[in-house]
Image 1: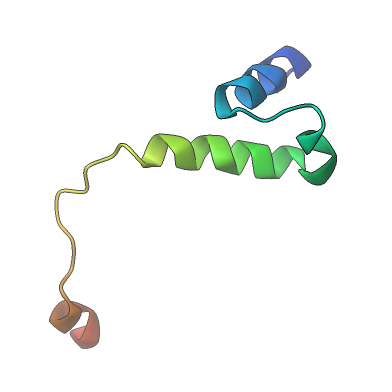
Image 2: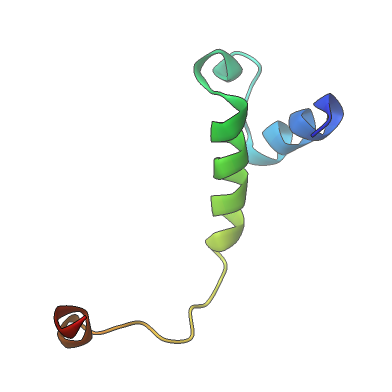
Length: 54
């Protein structure tokens, strides 16, 4: 990952330069990945009974 790409990801997530003192590159990457998972519509979700059998 290049520096400009990293800074673009920070802007997309709304992370300020001051906030970067508290975060690692990996944390920012994880936040970016998870932000895209929020919109995913999971087609099937297991019920409690299915989880218990698992």
